[in-house]
Image (tube, rainbow, N blue to C red):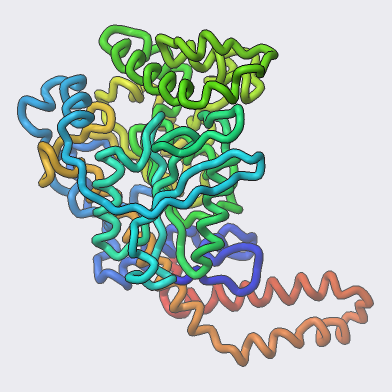
Length: 458
């Protein structure tokens, strides 16, 4: 759907954050989606097998279909969180997808790889909604959970692109810097680039694990300026200090070693870039790291200017970003996630933010969610929920855009003369105050148009 603006710096989806607009953004979403989908503006509750909290619960609940049913984990496989996590990683089916790769050179001469679905430019309209996928640590477009989500979105007519971070998914590394939980430069440039390619489309993003942490931090940093129309965070570690503590305990050490091994493989392919780097870098430690913490100590925290690994984790946690989120954000976590501990979820901030909603499943492991129609080897349970949410947002945007398009052009022409009229009345020599009055009146006219058509309700 086309992004609707009236030439202002603020997209229409943010109009209600301006001083003149009293109704909440989500009153608009709720009423608009009800009109678009014919659903009752209701409060039918999600199934009690799920823990659901957040300031946006009442607004988003009507969007969902699957969560009204009980969460039914697949027998035996899900009886242990580690078994479910490992089963999903090694035995989930890998859908076949033909990609067209675009290598994007960043402003610091780094490189990331964007994998688009081959043929979509010919088959999809230019205003089809675009979904950007951010895989987890060392993940990429080769991962099963990424491809299942991609196919689900494409089946709904969405354009999908996988954002492979530096060194991931065979993305080239062209500078002596990898990506990290703290660095938001690459995602900012990717979103800007994708938006410039499809200026008439709404942009959305889904992130998993570390990709979710980066996504939520980006959304919080951008706040009211965020170009995304909505986002979804899956199995987000949120608090990296807590995640690090649990990562070094019990069976989790197996995951720690596996991820460290993947990081070392990526590093070894580009080791020459770091050969004479000097400074505080400990290249032998990074090259032979037995844990993610060792790799971060030898390379990551130095690359991004942190005093210590703990300093890096503390200042890179997305739990601190939730309070600054101003676009619709859905977070889905598993209560028994071994890598993203539930005690790290910022529940209070999610509860206090009218833009956020959290769903916690009783089981799921990490990147597992072996439940629902696709279990055991098909798509994770979350895919249907994610698309319910995103479709809900895009339908609401379509209704809002239609309402704005109904705003009479002759009234805009009349308002354009308003500064001159005001100047005559008050004898103002400066046009600044008049221009402010003009803009405010236009915005009020748009707001009243929404009221009169029932798109906004208090």
